Image 1 (cartoon, rainbow over the protein chains, first blue to last red):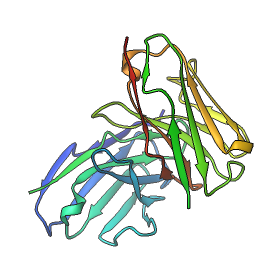
Image 2 (cartoon, chains in turn yellow, orange; image 1 turned 30 degrees about the vertical axis):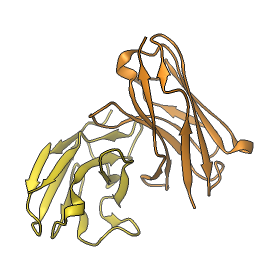
Image 3 (spheres, rainbow over the protein chains, first blue to last red; image 1 turned 45 degrees about the horizontal axis):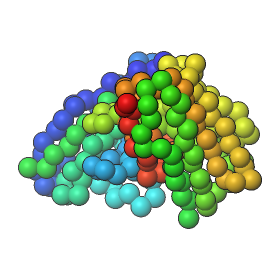
Image 4 (tube, each protein chain N blue to C red; image 1 turned 90 degrees about the horizontal axis):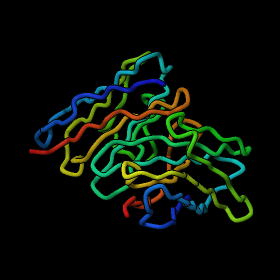
Length: 107
Length: 116
């Protein structure tokens, strides 16, 4: 199985700041990487698919990049509504596997 | 619009079988894949298995011996059955759809507690 190592596990940032979250795959996943946002008590919401494609309706302050085994999610100009937990998902091969999550808190 | 809704018992006794139903609307099960994903309380997400648009299934090897996914296309439903439940199977179970690349829609989830 492909292991997804996500970092950091938690993050604290101020409104207006820019943050990055990383996911490292145990083998090449050929850009088959998605990012999700999950708020407490809610289902995850798709932000980015195929490493860098922005899902319809997602603000442009979210962006994804990477290739091979290393991927990142960048959030520019943090807003209060961005406080959430973020997960990556590799859909390159079964079983699909998720990163452990990053909890983003706003100061 | 696309909707997925999970239903099933909220409480299951240890060693018993969990049966969940996912009822979908806004798309056809013969055109899209449906996956089951679960999340223990306060923890991360685990992919459980998939019903492909053509009826093929794939399972997480860690669950394969206990898990079965099936469907009834006439009722727009996908079913999950998992036997020999233990307390660490407690969590929220999600029915989801993939867009060909990544999961794009999630159900609201159903909380399942395994306890006597």
